[in-house]
Image 1 (cartoon, rainbow, N blue to C red):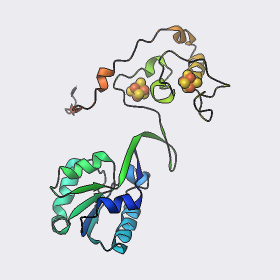
Image 2 (image 1 turned 180 degrees about the horizontal axis):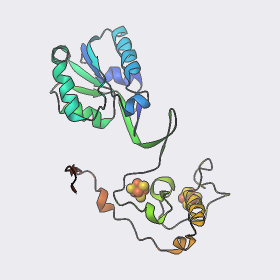
Image 3 (image 1 turned 30 degrees about the vertical axis):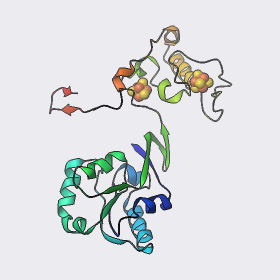
Length: 223
Ligand code: SF4
Ligand code: SF4
């Protein structure tokens, strides 16, 4: 899921300084789990903005904030409330903000910073385990990602600074290459540690750029 963090309220107020009236948009998926844009946080934000003299014209929490078709549909349902708003405050990730962008010409302000793709470790605790590099090598690393989980992102580790299984850069964190070694040992594939892994093809994640996939039913995905 996409991990977000709410900006300080003063920052949000500054973003909305030109808006007397605001329409709030949350997200029923990732931002709900991050507690940055679920029903409760949207209602709480509405109260805080009202206390600052803003008129709240309406609020919605689409099931999935980045689902552009659904967001457009919801915006049509709430057309009048949207019309009355000087600006929208979108309480989801950057993708959700831009789903809203595709559905209205009104000014849109983000309430959140979008941080990373995170695994849910337990409620409210997230960890980055994949950096979306576009050229996955988990097949040769025991399904433990050195790109995201080794502080140096080295592909032929460990680096030599590993100390009792912890990372030299962050002693609180397990050394990714120790984990990879231990996993390959369990699989009887320690020989893979000696295989040279060539530099990554970072072309696969050239940014900025347009990354889009069209997956046809029962067919191939076209990029
Ligand atoms: S190698 Fe790591 S960062 Fe790249 S796609 Fe695989 S898990 Fe994600
Ligand atoms: S100690 Fe391990 S995780 Fe840390 S930088 Fe070195 S190889 Fe990577």
